[in-house]
Length: 256
Image (cartoon, rainbow, N blue to C red):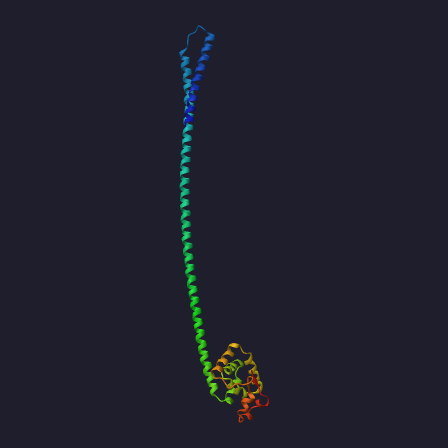
């Protein structure tokens, strides 16, 4: 703004200097032509009007430029204000979105933690229930085996032997291992020699856990001491009436 005013003043002073120069040049010319002639006021007035017209035109150009500059400044100020407003709105929107994302992430994490806790609790409950069911099943199986063993222990050897021999080897071994050693020997003595030998071999190879069961039964009711295992020949010789009914007395089978 100061520059424009300074320009106007400079133009004004230049206009008057030009007018003065033109007056002086005209005066010198008139003086040179006619040194004795008088000053012409009409010519000076016309020259002054020309200078005023030039000044007014220049002034109007400067005013137009100032108006255009003010309009540009106003437009720039409006654009700057609008841009600042838009930037603030964008920043607020971004902050709101970030806040919403953080809240959603927190809720998802809490939900995942809750589901994981529920899943762990259900898994632990299922494991506990499975262990309890297995324990109950073992108790039932133990009761069944004990009752089955008691049933075969009460049966006569010549009746129990063919039934056990007809069973699958695994079931036969379980029943024989649940009996006392002397009862086992008596039943094996009533079987065919090859079947008795096969069952004796399987009993000897059976897992140690089942053998520990027979050891417990043996401790509860310990039989008379023997040299090595159970000798079927000795068991059969103790019962001479049953000896002609089987072929085990020919070779004999020892269970270790």
